[in-house]
Length: 295
Image (cartoon, rainbow, N blue to C red):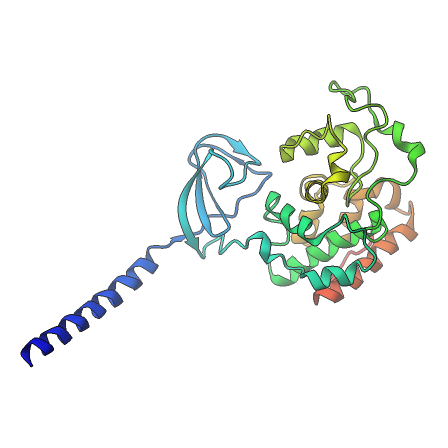
């Protein structure tokens, strides 16, 4: 009997020890630093969070994703704080079913999986702000993409007569892929040799020498679209990403993408087409459009 009681006390003691250890372990989880941004510059010692983990830069870096580059030292899991639990690419706020509803006639090239695979290049995309804003950005991006590609039907520009016009010979790097190689491709219809050079440099892909990757690889195509959306201002003064998350309105995304031809009365029909798609996609995602829809 005494031996049995001693065994029971020992078991209870072990359970109590476990209960005291577990909360302490959970309490040790670090607070997430500010989310990593592909466009931000990090010097040695600077921290950022990505997909629920904190990282510290070992030296100067920009557009090198934590977990995929030796420049970042993994500091372990984190929670809460400015970074929060950073959602991974599989947590895209648009579901496969919603994507299919938006693009019922899309070209098989434009796969949902290709888009999801591209999200890691710009983790702030559709991951900034409230759920309402995150969905609004997704609707805004996909509405512009739909307009540019005829509902994700066209992979490349249909007017082949324009192809030779997109080589700017004044650029020091020239047009190594050929005079007619830099026509519009992908979800944002990336064009001009200097844009292929800039996008390729940012994404770590040699698009200047091989621009055809944008029409051959769905993930590369989507990454070029996200590159433009998150980093380029076009005829505007802010990127489409910032236009939505900072409350400037959908109209500023139009200005950044094709404002020189469409905004300020240039082509109101095209502007309205983009707005109509945005409104419909926002309804599909169950969010609002906000104000300042036109440009």
